[in-house]
View 1 (tube, rainbow, N blue to C red):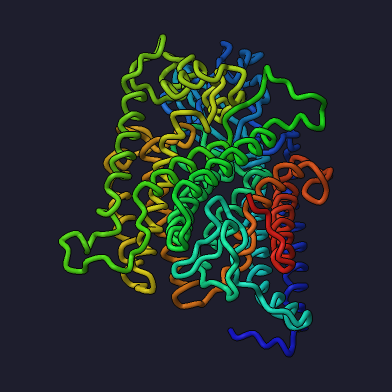
View 2: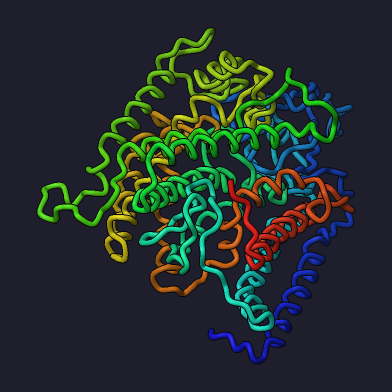
Length: 612
């Protein structure tokens, strides 16, 4: 609906009603179910209480296996002693996880495997007894107490935040009216690309600032800001929900989407900014030297962020982690800028329309760069599948630990892990990978390692290709969106072939830890679909201004570095009354993320941007 700023108090009434509704909903969601005949056991977050009752005359071993653990060995849950007499059970209480379904293995039973998905803070009983006084043993699961689904609080909080953000345009317009100021449309922030990302004219920190504001694509900053906001949210904890954490090995969660999207839109920015700089008359060598300097700065900033010993005394070089998010961005940025500088045209205005390649010019004109990327991917494939790794099979892509029936416990990541440990050293890579939780792997493994950086270059290069489409078909909205969709379809087909449309059975499964080829093609497919949607709503139809994501997208380096450095400080974190509550974690993480959105908005209003 159209917003009538003459009556802003109506919007504040909606805001306060939303706050009250949120508080009431959280209080209701926090009230546990009442079962007077059962005393609830004390369990932590994402846990439930399971009581195993054994009426047999022999002790019983209970084992368990998570649904998310592919081809894993059953893990012992505990031993339940024999019952004291006929009809008298012995009982042992256990704690089980609730994030994923679990299969319990009780060998004594007629059907030894009992599959169940427990609810958080629920109380359950597993009864093992002879069936009708016979020798047949029966296992049955009984729900003693099941609490309210904790995901309800998440939906309530996120729905409330969306409502507040939906009203942000009204608040923003009111502030502009009261402040009697105009919104700036000039690009100032570099955002990991050269700072001019316009299609027709450019504004770059390495160029004199033009007198008139340049026309820019808000959809790119909105896309970047959306990726960044989700990244901040999941880095702060994501309410401690499993789907806001990185997948243990194969597969995707929300947390696995955002970093590749950030790399993708960086490539798009590179394409537009390099083209603008060349049209402005800058030499390729000067652009290359500036790209090298920016990459060095990003790499050094990344080293400082992931090794936060600046508050704890001197930095220990013996345990300095070398790979990281900004380090990978720096490497991908430098490689893709170098490739683009080799093939980018100074002007696209005089291309022969009748040439045979004209209809696919955004691809064929840059075939040397594509050839280089194909060579890089060939190197990745050869190293991944042909490099001999001690005590591991060739081409191993598994998590090690208890995966693959425990045959390769020291092979986490295969060639990718081996290269990192050999090249960087065991003490200089990530020590607690996500695979340790479910697969019980104990080897250090870095998700931002050396081999994965090759595929990161591919992701940025696919973003560069999206930028070429924007350059060659400027203002031809239908052509731009059609080509985005075609590329998305092609990448989706490649992903389907590589994965065989399965989670674990494909040639190359989708894996964020390895940054596998299928992971890149799948996320690039999703990125193009999302970019089409944002481009259409923001730049074509102008139904949406991009707020609030537009503002973090304009100051991405500051927001990312700031949220990492200040993570442990108020107002981004505070002591909780109940640290085992999803609701409290979710509230804290949402408010912390919203603080960075507000900070980026205020900095935008003051024209304050961090440029590198």
